[in-house]
Structures are given as C-alpha cells and as structure tokens.
Amino acid sequence: MYSKLQISRTSVKLKLLFSGLLLAMIVIITSCANIGYPTGGPKDVTPPKILKSIPNNYSTLFNGKEIVITFDEYVVFNNLQSQLIVSPPLENTPDIKIKGKNVVINFKDSLRKNTTYTIYFGDAIADLHEGNVLSNYEFVFSTGNVLDSLTLSGRVLDAFTKRPEKDILVMLYDHFEDSVPYKEKPYYITKTKENGEYILNNLRDLKYKVFALKDANSNLLFDQPNERIAYNDSLVTPRIKPILIKIDSLHKDSLKVDSINKTIIHDKNLFIKDLNLFEEIDSTQRITRAEFIAKGEIMFAFRYPLKKLEIIPQFAVKDEKWKIEEMNRTNDTLIYWVTDSDMDSAKFIIKDNNKTLDTVNMFYRKHTSLKKTPQKLPKIILNSNLNGLFDYFNSIYLTVPNPIKSINLNSAILIQEKDTLKPKLSFIDSIHRHLKLNYTFKQATNYKLYIPDSIMTDIFGMHNDSLGYYFRTNSTEYVGNFIVNIAIDSISSPCIIQLLDDKEEVLAQQTIYKATKITYPNLSPGIYQLKAIYDKNNDGAWDTGKYLKKLQPEKVIYYPDKITIKANWDLEEKWKL
Image (cartoon, rainbow, N blue to C red; front, side):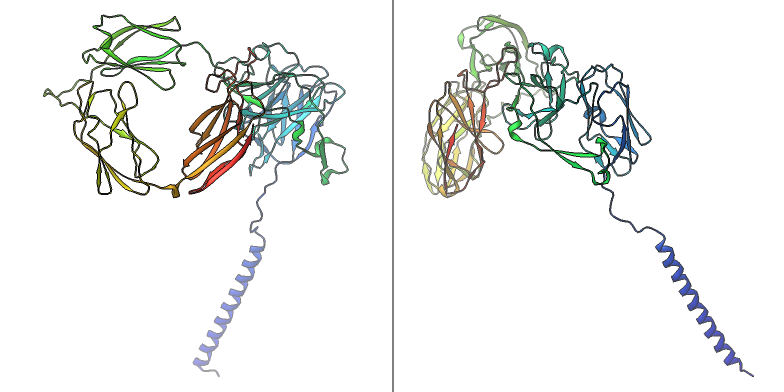
C-alpha cells in the first residue's frame, strides 16, 4: 500500500503536468489565433482607377446629356467647384454627382456641334478611405467626328516681380474685338499651375486672341477694376505637340482609351512668350486723405504724384508764414505744419494741374483730460541711424518729429575713444526736420555721440532731452564691393538699374542710357539682386499697362543669378541686356 506522503507527491506531479499541458495548449491556440488576424502592411497610396466610362474617354460623335465614369473603389470630391474647368465654357455648370463608385456628369446646356470638349477635374477626385488623389484627370469628347488635337502653352508671370502666378485663367477667343474679354466668355479656358505654366489641349486649327485673368467674381469676364490681366500683343496659332503614349500593362490588350496613361513631353520651344500679369491703374487724380493728423499738423494725401498743386485756404490768414510745407519723396503727400497752435478747424479748395479736385472741411479732435493741472510740454524725440555696429563710411542722420525753430548746430559732442571732438550738425531739408553729422570715422573704433539738453526748440515750443549714443565702427574686413558691367546694344529709352536686397527692397537706383559700369561699394555680406526696368515713358518709375490702349507694362528683367557678397571681397560681373 502507498503511504499518504507518496500519494501527496504523486498528486502534486499530476497537477504540475496538467498545468504544463494546459499552458502549452493556450500558447498554441493563441499563436494560431494570431495567424488569423492581419498584422498590418504597406499603406495604400494608389489613386482610384477608372474601370470604364460611358461613353469612352476621347470619344467622338457624342450627342447625349450624360457621362458616367466608373471607378474601382468609392471616391469623393475635394474642392470640385474651385478646380473644375469645362472648355469651351458652358452657360451653366454641369451637374456632377457621385453615385456609388460612379461619377455622373449631366449637361444642362446644349453642346456645340463639331466641338471638342475637355472636362478638367484637376485634383478634385480622391479615394474615400485614404484620400489618394487622381491628379490632373480630364475627360475629353467631341460632338463631331474628329477630336481636335492642337495645343498651346506658356507661362503667366507677375509683370513687376517676374514671379510665376498660380490659378490664373488663360482664355482663348476665336474672334478678336478689343471688347471681347469684357463681354463674352472664352472659347477655350485653363488655369496656370504653381510654376505659372499652362497648357491648352485639344484645340482647333484657328488663330486665337489670348487673354489671362485673375477673376475676382468668377464670371469669366474682365469687369472688375481690381482684376489683374495679361494679354498677347498678336494672335496666336496652336501647334502640334508630341505626346509620349504608355499603354497600361494591365489593359494592354484593350483598345479603350480610358486605359491609356499619357505623359506629355514639355517642349519649351512650343511655349508662346510669357504673359505679364498687371493691374490697370485708373489715372484720375483723387484726394485719398485730408485731415488734422495731430495738433498743428495737416496731411493732404493724393492718389498719384502731383503735377501742379494748389491749396487755397477758405479762411483769413495773417501772412504766408502761417504754415510750413513738407512734400514727401514720391510727391504725392503734403504736410502743412501750422504755426498757429490754436487752429482747430480749416476749409480748403484743392486743385491739381488747374483742375479742382475737392473742397475739404477738417476739424482737430481734442483729447480731453481729467487732470486740471497744467501739463508740461513733451520732449522732442530724436531718431537716428545709429546702432551697435556702424558703417565707418556712413554719415550720422538725426530726425525730429516737427520742424525745428531754433538750434545750436555747434553743440554736439563726439567722443572718439578718449578724444573729444566738435563736429558740426547741418540741416539737409528746407523745413528743418532732418540733420546730418559729417565726420570721417576711423575703422574699428569706439565712439559716443552726445546731444546736450535743450539745444533745439521746435515750432510748438518743445525742447530736446540730453541724449547719448554709443556705437562702434566696422572696417573693410566686414564689407564687400560689387561691380557690374552693363552692356546694351541700343536702347530707345532710358533703363533704370536697381540693386535689391534679399527682400527686394531697393538699396540703390541709377538710370542709364548706354553701356555703363556701376560700382556698389561697402555692401554688407549677403544676397542681392539686380533689376532692370525699361523706362519707356522716361518718368523715372515702372508703369503698368492699359489693355484698350494696347500698352503693355514696362519691361522688367532680373539679372539671372543671385549676387552673393562676401566680407573683404570684390565681385565683378557682366550683364548683357
């Protein structure tokens, strides 16, 4: 007989064996279950495929009202309204809906006879689950027995900056009156891409008027004053463009055109010349602002530079010294500094070039204060071109907010290291708001400019506080020089040459009439650009175009490369215009 101890040990062994078997079975079952569940895989990046269409894409003799395009999966529209283009345009946009895996197009208008139509979807069709886009999809058909096959391509650029313009409508007209873009929708239409390029396919063999439009109200007409436009000077003829055809291997035995993947060869020789986009300017002179902008300060702002300004006060004046006049650099804004500090209203008749523009009434709105105690006059605030590191070849400029009535021009003190100097200040404007301190600074030297208290009084009785500016000059090791030799074969009008910084701010400008060598000294290290403007009307500025007068915007050319200026380095380039 077995002892109790033996029985107990045997029981424990059986329990352990059973537990081990149970654990093994769980592992096997779990691993088998894991085999049955997907562990993931590569993300679906395939755009929806077209299985068929009724009629086939690129069909002829279409006389129906409906087109059905069937996909291999469910699809959705992304911004269809903004991307859809039907060319030639229809009076009413087709009704386009998704039904199951089908895109259904229903026409509301009667279609033209013997015409090739293109329905361009852009990137508006994507699959439902992953959002994969069917890019640049278009459906083409003809109501006649042939498909028109010619093409026209080019670029649209901003006329002044030469940057590519995206989403600009490029439109073709098959008759050529100047009024056509104002009154009629185009015969063919497309949009520019990111790089400003456009392609018009499936065109008839005709001559066309080309017009580009930034359509502000989406009616395909040039009827808004702020709509930017571009046009070609002459009629254009579309051309045959080579097309590389690749047959989809999955459908190589099929004759359906839907299964053809076309890749267009871009041939720059087939581009027409660039279309330069501009906004027409209404040349009527107008007052844009006439008011007190501060106590004793009246502003008259105009739409364009002034030719012959007359401002006639409609109130009694003691003498001609009742105001000081200041015209801005662009000759389109005038400031009256009124010496009579009690003036709080005024009426003027304003004329330019002997034409009355307006009669204006203005009032100074006083700011009331709860404090009844007399207030001290504020101090004059001086602004300067000084900073921590100052160009040794530069001059110091100081600007005050109001004209100066009196000043001690010999009171400024300049400390050079430990030496005290007495440079002289001088005004560089007629109304005494801009001061200049001329001095030949040493390179890599510490300076302090000290302006003593109350050395100047403005026309309103305000004085300056004492001011101290600390700065250090740089040296030739920190700047570079740029020399450009400009070659011009012959020009009938002057050419404006501009040096621009990397933000396209004008740093220097010079007008040339022949081949010229220009030196730009002491430039800070950085990226610069050169720009040429053909100043056709010799007014010293760039001018936009006028469509009905057949005036293109004045031609602009950029130097083809960025100009990199390095410290302590001379760069010389040639530029043939």
